[in-house]
Length: 120
Image: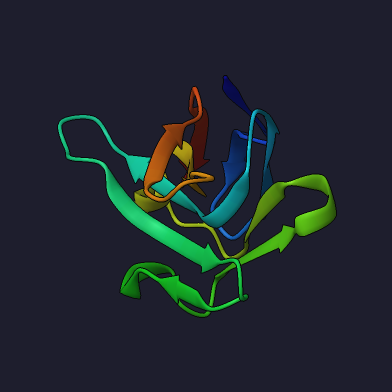
């Protein structure tokens, strides 16, 4: 069993910053990648940022230059530093974990989500 615990969401004014954290625990053989996705009301869940075990990162165009994803491999934790926040960043943010199985194959896990609200 794998658990993801997210923290750091909240209410912030436009131009402000937030830092999201997601800690993974449980039966994890190896982590392939971790990422953050967001889902606004009435919209599909979409990628915000992604980081591989090797440290390669990928960002949605809308957050490039404002958000930074990082990870602490020793703590199985991924972070999302969100700067220059805009009202359109308002959404529920979900942590995603991709793990490798010992004998091949991958699994994907989701956190419970944390609300980020940016007021204008």
